[in-house]
Structures are given as structure tokens and as C-alpha cells.
Image (cartoon, rainbow, N blue to C red):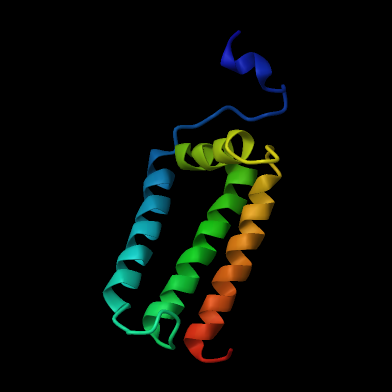
Length: 119
């Protein structure tokens, strides 16, 4: 069975999206590098730049999952994330991207607020 036989007629064709995939990965790698660089506090969740960047990093992962739900045909990176939702999640399905988005956004936002000293 060919891969394209499973796709509906309204689904746009897959694009390689090498630039978009690379951009997304470099954003995540850059944020992780900034988190590592600024995380010199002795306490795990103290206020400061490192904790704010950690919250932002986790929130960006959530937005990547959200983008993968809508734009999985645009980039390889998004197809990998949607594959994770469809095959490596329980329950499996594309809608798990919304769950991962909400989970990462809520946790990241709480860490961000903690880093800013609000909570």
C-alpha cells in the first residue's frame, strides 16, 4: 500500500520544509542554550532570567506541537511531532497535539511567572 493512498483528496501534499524545520530546531536549541547559560542559581525555581527562559522554552515546545497539528504538511519537524502524537501517545491521535500544547503552556507559564516573582 502506498503512503499517499491513506491521505484524503483535500490534504495538501507534503513539503520538505527544511528551512522551517531548521528554524524551529535552532529556536529550540538557542533557547535551551540560553537556559543553560543563565541557570546559575542554586535553587531550582528561584527568580531570575534562567527560570524565565526555562518557562519560555517549555511554552515554545507547546507551540511547536500546536503548529504541528495545523501545518504538519509544511515541515519534516512538524511531521515528526504529529507522528509522536499519533503513534507514541496513549490515547493516540492528532488531537494529542492540543493536549501537549496545553500541558506545556500551563507548566511553562507557571515556571515563567515563578521566574518573574509573581508566584
